[in-house]
Image (cartoon, rainbow, N blue to C red; front, side):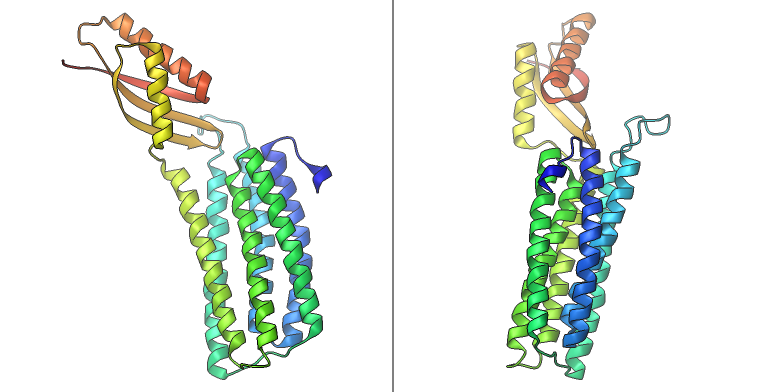
Length: 292
Protein backbone atom coordinates (compact mmCIF):
# COMPACT_ATOMS: atom_id res chain seq x y z
CA UNK A 1 0.00 0.00 0.00
CA UNK A 2 2.82 2.39 0.84
CA UNK A 3 4.24 2.04 -2.65
CA UNK A 4 0.88 2.83 -4.29
CA UNK A 5 0.62 6.35 -2.86
CA UNK A 6 -1.33 8.44 -5.41
CA UNK A 7 -0.37 11.94 -6.52
CA UNK A 8 -3.84 13.55 -6.59
CA UNK A 9 -7.14 13.51 -4.72
CA UNK A 10 -8.86 11.86 -7.68
CA UNK A 11 -6.29 9.04 -7.85
CA UNK A 12 -6.56 8.61 -4.06
CA UNK A 13 -10.31 8.09 -4.31
CA UNK A 14 -10.00 5.49 -7.06
CA UNK A 15 -7.18 3.62 -5.31
CA UNK A 16 -8.88 3.55 -1.90
CA UNK A 17 -12.13 2.40 -3.47
CA UNK A 18 -10.53 -0.45 -5.44
CA UNK A 19 -8.41 -1.74 -2.54
CA UNK A 20 -11.42 -1.54 -0.22
CA UNK A 21 -13.65 -3.55 -2.58
CA UNK A 22 -11.07 -6.35 -2.89
CA UNK A 23 -10.28 -6.59 0.83
CA UNK A 24 -13.87 -6.28 2.05
CA UNK A 25 -15.26 -8.81 -0.40
CA UNK A 26 -12.74 -11.39 0.83
CA UNK A 27 -13.49 -10.56 4.48
CA UNK A 28 -17.24 -10.78 3.83
CA UNK A 29 -16.84 -14.35 2.57
CA UNK A 30 -14.70 -15.26 5.61
CA UNK A 31 -17.13 -13.69 8.11
CA UNK A 32 -20.23 -15.15 6.48
CA UNK A 33 -18.70 -18.62 6.64
CA UNK A 34 -17.73 -18.01 10.28
CA UNK A 35 -21.22 -16.76 11.18
CA UNK A 36 -22.91 -19.79 9.66
CA UNK A 37 -20.40 -22.07 11.40
CA UNK A 38 -21.09 -20.45 14.79
CA UNK A 39 -24.85 -19.87 14.25
CA UNK A 40 -24.22 -16.21 15.15
CA UNK A 41 -26.46 -13.30 14.13
CA UNK A 42 -23.80 -10.89 15.41
CA UNK A 43 -21.12 -12.38 13.13
CA UNK A 44 -23.48 -12.51 10.14
CA UNK A 45 -24.50 -8.88 10.81
CA UNK A 46 -20.81 -8.01 10.96
CA UNK A 47 -20.27 -9.84 7.65
CA UNK A 48 -22.92 -7.72 5.92
CA UNK A 49 -21.47 -4.62 7.56
CA UNK A 50 -18.22 -5.56 5.80
CA UNK A 51 -20.05 -6.19 2.52
CA UNK A 52 -21.60 -2.72 2.80
CA UNK A 53 -18.00 -1.42 2.86
CA UNK A 54 -17.54 -2.88 -0.63
CA UNK A 55 -20.79 -1.29 -1.81
CA UNK A 56 -19.92 2.12 -0.38
CA UNK A 57 -16.43 1.94 -1.87
CA UNK A 58 -18.04 1.31 -5.26
CA UNK A 59 -20.20 4.40 -4.60
CA UNK A 60 -17.00 6.30 -3.76
CA UNK A 61 -15.43 5.39 -7.11
CA UNK A 62 -18.58 6.42 -9.01
CA UNK A 63 -18.80 9.61 -6.96
CA UNK A 64 -15.23 10.59 -7.77
CA UNK A 65 -15.82 9.87 -11.44
CA UNK A 66 -18.59 12.48 -11.41
CA UNK A 67 -17.00 14.90 -8.91
CA UNK A 68 -13.87 15.46 -11.00
CA UNK A 69 -15.65 16.23 -14.24
CA UNK A 70 -14.63 19.73 -15.39
CA UNK A 71 -17.02 22.70 -14.95
CA UNK A 72 -19.66 23.11 -17.63
CA UNK A 73 -22.43 25.56 -18.54
CA UNK A 74 -24.89 24.05 -16.06
CA UNK A 75 -22.30 23.63 -13.28
CA UNK A 76 -19.91 26.60 -13.46
CA UNK A 77 -18.31 25.75 -10.10
CA UNK A 78 -17.59 22.16 -11.13
CA UNK A 79 -19.02 18.92 -9.74
CA UNK A 80 -16.97 18.38 -6.57
CA UNK A 81 -19.96 18.72 -4.24
CA UNK A 82 -20.90 15.30 -5.55
CA UNK A 83 -18.21 14.01 -3.18
CA UNK A 84 -20.49 15.06 -0.31
CA UNK A 85 -23.45 13.43 -2.06
CA UNK A 86 -21.39 10.23 -2.23
CA UNK A 87 -20.69 10.43 1.51
CA UNK A 88 -24.43 10.82 2.21
CA UNK A 89 -25.12 7.73 0.09
CA UNK A 90 -22.48 5.86 2.13
CA UNK A 91 -24.09 6.98 5.38
CA UNK A 92 -27.60 6.06 4.21
CA UNK A 93 -26.52 2.56 3.19
CA UNK A 94 -24.87 2.13 6.58
CA UNK A 95 -28.04 3.21 8.36
CA UNK A 96 -30.17 0.73 6.43
CA UNK A 97 -27.78 -2.09 7.38
CA UNK A 98 -27.89 -1.03 11.04
CA UNK A 99 -31.70 -0.98 11.30
CA UNK A 100 -31.99 -4.31 9.48
CA UNK A 101 -29.75 -6.03 12.01
CA UNK A 102 -31.50 -4.47 14.98
CA UNK A 103 -34.61 -6.34 13.84
CA UNK A 104 -32.69 -9.58 13.36
CA UNK A 105 -30.99 -9.30 16.76
CA UNK A 106 -34.30 -8.74 18.54
CA UNK A 107 -35.75 -11.73 16.72
CA UNK A 108 -32.86 -13.90 17.91
CA UNK A 109 -33.32 -12.77 21.52
CA UNK A 110 -37.03 -13.58 21.37
CA UNK A 111 -36.32 -17.07 20.01
CA UNK A 112 -33.50 -17.58 22.59
CA UNK A 113 -30.99 -18.77 19.97
CA UNK A 114 -27.40 -19.30 21.05
CA UNK A 115 -24.15 -19.27 19.10
CA UNK A 116 -21.59 -22.06 18.90
CA UNK A 117 -18.06 -21.34 20.16
CA UNK A 118 -15.29 -22.16 17.68
CA UNK A 119 -11.55 -21.47 17.71
CA UNK A 120 -11.66 -21.28 13.92
CA UNK A 121 -14.12 -18.40 14.29
CA UNK A 122 -11.82 -16.67 16.78
CA UNK A 123 -8.83 -16.91 14.42
CA UNK A 124 -10.76 -15.72 11.35
CA UNK A 125 -12.33 -12.78 13.18
CA UNK A 126 -8.94 -11.76 14.63
CA UNK A 127 -7.49 -11.69 11.11
CA UNK A 128 -10.45 -9.54 10.03
CA UNK A 129 -9.91 -7.03 12.88
CA UNK A 130 -6.24 -6.58 11.98
CA UNK A 131 -6.95 -6.25 8.25
CA UNK A 132 -9.74 -3.67 8.74
CA UNK A 133 -7.75 -1.55 11.18
CA UNK A 134 -4.78 -1.46 8.79
CA UNK A 135 -7.13 -0.54 5.92
CA UNK A 136 -8.72 2.21 8.05
CA UNK A 137 -5.35 3.74 8.97
CA UNK A 138 -4.20 3.71 5.36
CA UNK A 139 -7.45 5.32 4.16
CA UNK A 140 -7.32 7.98 6.91
CA UNK A 141 -3.78 8.80 5.82
CA UNK A 142 -5.01 9.35 2.26
CA UNK A 143 -7.97 11.42 3.48
CA UNK A 144 -5.71 13.65 5.57
CA UNK A 145 -3.15 14.13 2.81
CA UNK A 146 -5.71 15.07 0.16
CA UNK A 147 -8.41 16.61 2.43
CA UNK A 148 -10.96 14.11 1.10
CA UNK A 149 -14.17 13.90 3.16
CA UNK A 150 -15.62 10.90 1.34
CA UNK A 151 -12.38 8.90 1.78
CA UNK A 152 -12.46 9.80 5.47
CA UNK A 153 -16.07 8.56 5.63
CA UNK A 154 -15.02 5.28 4.04
CA UNK A 155 -12.07 5.01 6.46
CA UNK A 156 -14.33 5.39 9.50
CA UNK A 157 -16.61 2.80 7.95
CA UNK A 158 -13.60 0.43 7.96
CA UNK A 159 -12.75 1.31 11.57
CA UNK A 160 -16.34 0.82 12.75
CA UNK A 161 -16.22 -2.61 11.14
CA UNK A 162 -13.01 -3.44 13.05
CA UNK A 163 -14.55 -2.29 16.35
CA UNK A 164 -17.76 -4.24 15.66
CA UNK A 165 -15.74 -7.39 15.00
CA UNK A 166 -13.84 -6.93 18.28
CA UNK A 167 -17.18 -6.76 20.10
CA UNK A 168 -18.26 -9.97 18.40
CA UNK A 169 -15.00 -11.66 19.42
CA UNK A 170 -15.72 -10.82 23.05
CA UNK A 171 -19.16 -12.34 22.60
CA UNK A 172 -17.67 -15.58 21.31
CA UNK A 173 -15.72 -16.08 24.53
CA UNK A 174 -18.75 -15.21 26.68
CA UNK A 175 -21.14 -17.42 24.72
CA UNK A 176 -20.43 -20.43 26.90
CA UNK A 177 -21.62 -18.47 29.95
CA UNK A 178 -24.74 -16.59 28.75
CA UNK A 179 -27.16 -17.63 25.99
CA UNK A 180 -28.30 -14.07 25.12
CA UNK A 181 -24.87 -12.57 24.42
CA UNK A 182 -25.10 -12.96 20.63
CA UNK A 183 -28.40 -11.08 20.35
CA UNK A 184 -27.22 -8.30 22.66
CA UNK A 185 -23.95 -7.89 20.78
CA UNK A 186 -25.93 -7.84 17.54
CA UNK A 187 -27.83 -4.84 18.95
CA UNK A 188 -24.56 -3.16 19.98
CA UNK A 189 -23.01 -3.64 16.54
CA UNK A 190 -26.18 -2.32 14.91
CA UNK A 191 -26.16 0.75 17.18
CA UNK A 192 -22.54 1.46 16.27
CA UNK A 193 -23.35 1.20 12.57
CA UNK A 194 -26.28 3.64 12.92
CA UNK A 195 -24.17 6.15 14.89
CA UNK A 196 -21.42 6.13 12.24
CA UNK A 197 -24.10 6.58 9.54
CA UNK A 198 -25.57 9.59 11.36
CA UNK A 199 -22.16 11.23 11.79
CA UNK A 200 -21.25 10.78 8.11
CA UNK A 201 -24.59 12.20 6.89
CA UNK A 202 -24.41 15.16 9.30
CA UNK A 203 -20.88 16.21 8.28
CA UNK A 204 -21.53 15.78 4.57
CA UNK A 205 -24.82 17.69 4.70
CA UNK A 206 -23.05 20.70 6.22
CA UNK A 207 -20.79 20.90 3.15
CA UNK A 208 -23.81 20.99 0.82
CA UNK A 209 -25.89 23.44 2.88
CA UNK A 210 -23.04 25.91 3.32
CA UNK A 211 -21.67 27.24 6.59
CA UNK A 212 -20.56 30.30 8.51
CA UNK A 213 -16.82 30.85 8.86
CA UNK A 214 -15.05 29.57 11.96
CA UNK A 215 -13.76 32.21 14.41
CA UNK A 216 -10.21 31.68 13.13
CA UNK A 217 -11.32 32.08 9.50
CA UNK A 218 -13.21 35.27 10.30
CA UNK A 219 -10.21 36.59 12.26
CA UNK A 220 -7.97 35.90 9.25
CA UNK A 221 -10.33 37.79 6.93
CA UNK A 222 -10.29 40.81 9.28
CA UNK A 223 -6.49 40.68 9.40
CA UNK A 224 -6.32 40.68 5.59
CA UNK A 225 -8.75 43.60 5.43
CA UNK A 226 -6.58 45.64 7.83
CA UNK A 227 -3.60 45.06 5.52
CA UNK A 228 -5.48 46.60 2.59
CA UNK A 229 -6.89 49.76 4.20
CA UNK A 230 -7.40 51.35 7.60
CA UNK A 231 -10.73 52.66 6.30
CA UNK A 232 -12.34 49.20 6.31
CA UNK A 233 -14.67 48.69 9.24
CA UNK A 234 -17.12 46.06 10.40
CA UNK A 235 -16.38 43.10 8.16
CA UNK A 236 -19.60 41.11 8.45
CA UNK A 237 -22.21 38.89 6.74
CA UNK A 238 -19.56 36.34 5.77
CA UNK A 239 -20.77 33.19 3.95
CA UNK A 240 -18.70 30.27 2.65
CA UNK A 241 -19.80 28.11 -0.27
CA UNK A 242 -17.58 25.06 -0.76
CA UNK A 243 -17.40 23.08 -4.00
CA UNK A 244 -14.73 20.55 -3.13
CA UNK A 245 -11.42 22.38 -3.39
CA UNK A 246 -13.10 25.46 -4.89
CA UNK A 247 -14.40 27.90 -2.23
CA UNK A 248 -16.53 30.99 -2.82
CA UNK A 249 -16.79 33.56 -0.01
CA UNK A 250 -19.18 36.52 0.10
CA UNK A 251 -18.81 39.29 2.69
CA UNK A 252 -19.73 42.90 3.47
CA UNK A 253 -17.40 45.72 4.52
CA UNK A 254 -18.09 49.32 5.57
CA UNK A 255 -16.13 52.31 4.21
CA UNK A 256 -16.35 56.07 4.89
CA UNK A 257 -19.48 57.60 3.32
CA UNK A 258 -17.52 60.37 1.58
CA UNK A 259 -15.13 58.01 -0.24
CA UNK A 260 -15.51 58.08 -4.05
CA UNK A 261 -16.79 55.11 -6.00
CA UNK A 262 -13.48 54.39 -7.76
CA UNK A 263 -11.57 54.26 -4.48
CA UNK A 264 -14.20 52.01 -2.85
CA UNK A 265 -14.05 49.67 -5.84
CA UNK A 266 -10.24 49.60 -5.72
CA UNK A 267 -10.23 48.70 -1.99
CA UNK A 268 -12.76 45.91 -2.53
CA UNK A 269 -10.84 44.55 -5.53
CA UNK A 270 -7.52 44.56 -3.66
CA UNK A 271 -9.10 42.71 -0.75
CA UNK A 272 -10.60 40.13 -3.12
CA UNK A 273 -7.19 39.61 -4.71
CA UNK A 274 -5.46 39.24 -1.32
CA UNK A 275 -8.05 36.70 -0.14
CA UNK A 276 -7.50 34.74 -3.36
CA UNK A 277 -3.73 34.81 -2.83
CA UNK A 278 -3.67 33.98 0.89
CA UNK A 279 -6.67 31.66 1.32
CA UNK A 280 -7.26 30.39 -2.24
CA UNK A 281 -10.90 31.57 -1.98
CA UNK A 282 -12.83 33.44 -4.66
CA UNK A 283 -14.30 36.47 -2.88
CA UNK A 284 -17.24 38.73 -3.71
CA UNK A 285 -17.37 41.87 -1.57
CA UNK A 286 -20.33 44.18 -0.98
CA UNK A 287 -19.42 47.74 0.14
CA UNK A 288 -21.60 49.77 2.58
CA UNK A 289 -21.08 53.25 4.09
CA UNK A 290 -20.59 53.65 7.82
CA UNK A 291 -21.59 56.51 10.07
CA UNK A 292 -19.35 57.96 12.79
